[in-house]
Length: 171
Ligand code: SF4
Image (cartoon, rainbow, N blue to C red; front, side, top):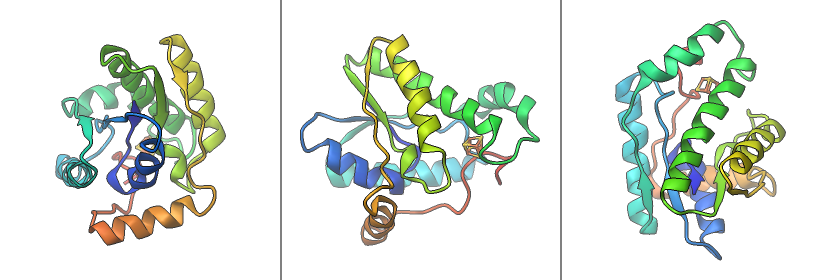
């Protein structure tokens, strides 16, 4: 089960993992504000899934639930405690979906971003995966020009690329 934060970030991880695994995507999305932006990112991901003939789970967009938990950390800078909590929320939802779907492994596209703490993401992901009886696939996707290649792939596929992380606080 691959947690997908957005279509451009998923292009490289999906291609690499698909080489020797059956991959399913999970797009949490409830951290994304406003709803029109969620629609754009989801639509871009649906386009990528059509291109790779892949399956992705899209749970209901429930920003109020994400806000209920994260708004206590509204004043945190990007990259601070709110983001760590946000990673945890997204990856816990993904782990639940992975178990429900019969997946054995779990990974995330988040580490392709040069703006995010890959070590923290991998540590949270590993802890959550193990709590759910899953195997965490540790990757730092931005390595080996991963981020640059994702930008190129998104451009060639005409995928929408956002200019902020996602939540109202980041915006
Ligand atoms: S800036 Fe991004 S990672 Fe941080 S809380 Fe907002 S949506 Fe989540």
